[in-house]
Image 1 (spheres, rainbow, N blue to C red):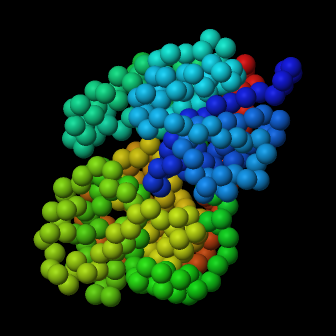
Image 2 (tube, rainbow, N blue to C red):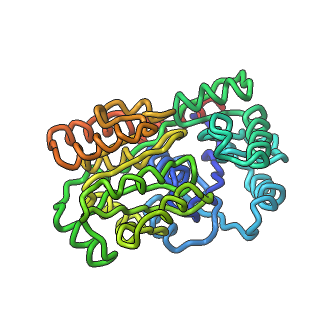
Length: 372
């Protein structure tokens, strides 16, 4: 790309300081791959100071940090970020979901809207939540220079609901290479037992909120082997009364088989996945759905919802099901627990490796940059 100076990209990376979630993974891994593939382009991550992040990116000479001073996201978007963009004269600025109202004429604005599921599942979100996000997301979709999303499902819904005329680029999520590495399962099980005091479990990883449908797993617990535990890893981002109600119904003995963890680092998360007997993802709606892919990459048996964007994950068949039918869920889970098929697990891992890589997403981002 002919230019008088290295291109500079600003990335609003406040999510890098947040709990584990798909959007955080997207930002972190996309720009690692992009920086590796484009060493002459300077990437500036806007985030809060973190020794962990500094260490994680220390080998990327073209990734730099701009540490935020303002804890209020609104004030950052209104004042701090526009000032940074003006002072550094960035060529591109990349945001998740929402771009600032005040724009710099020199800078091209990229926004990734991962999903607008609150329009398809209105009962799971308050009216104020939906109104606020629709207003901000629609404005950003129509006023940005480049609009991205992560799945064909989200692309179609954004186009239909926000009446977007411009091209929508799909920058698909990928799975980190560490999930595909070989390991000794017993060693991983002992590590989790020693550090977290739990063993012999089925695992769920993602945020705790109503649309994620975690209560289905609690409802099944008394129908499963008595020594099988249930582990949830994820932040409680929205109150899930359905989940709380189902847990309250359980006997004290059954409650002891449920474990909740959050703020788990990557190394421990990988160990949790590798040590699991089975991974279950009952979500009603996803803009993408990284966690079941990470488990599948690690060759763990996965029972995955086939709803919304997850309909693409056909390699999980026959364990790619509708979680609204409890009896089907129970039968599929019982079969998955009793019949481990290493060849099938290897096939799934290979399919995920072939179809979901950060290189693909980076190539799309690179094509956007070349359009300047």
